[in-house]
Length: 187
Image (cartoon, rainbow, N blue to C red; front, side, top):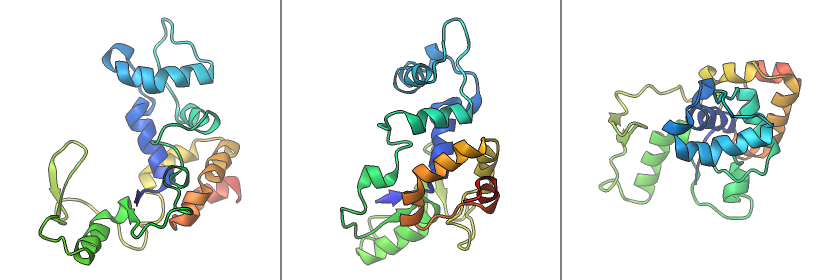
């Protein structure tokens, strides 16, 4: 099983599936329109007739939190993979993936099969540990500061509901909530 900080997953889904707040063009992305945007427009009561399609992060979260969570891009990992019911031998974290993969390759004696120092990035380009920037091992369980800004713009109640929805993922996998967010909702 591979996991990622749930708050990071949400920002990533917003940026990838909902354009990160940019104006969306239905004709350029018919599958995204059908799978993501149209259901969100309907759930949020937004019309897309003659108006540009655009979602704020808060709107995306309202859609993700308050509609039936069928999409694996923002469903809780506890719901998707049932870590409380299934006995996983290994849980890898995206934030420490290279280190986790190296451990697993040695543990399973598959170091000849897996080049643990080379991966493909999202664009399919080969990267190595030398060319990627990694975060220190002391802060890998907290949210990347670049993502915190998305949550600081939210109303405190919505932020609290996001934290509540993903609390089990946060606890099960040892992820932290940045102090700036804790202060906004006073957990």
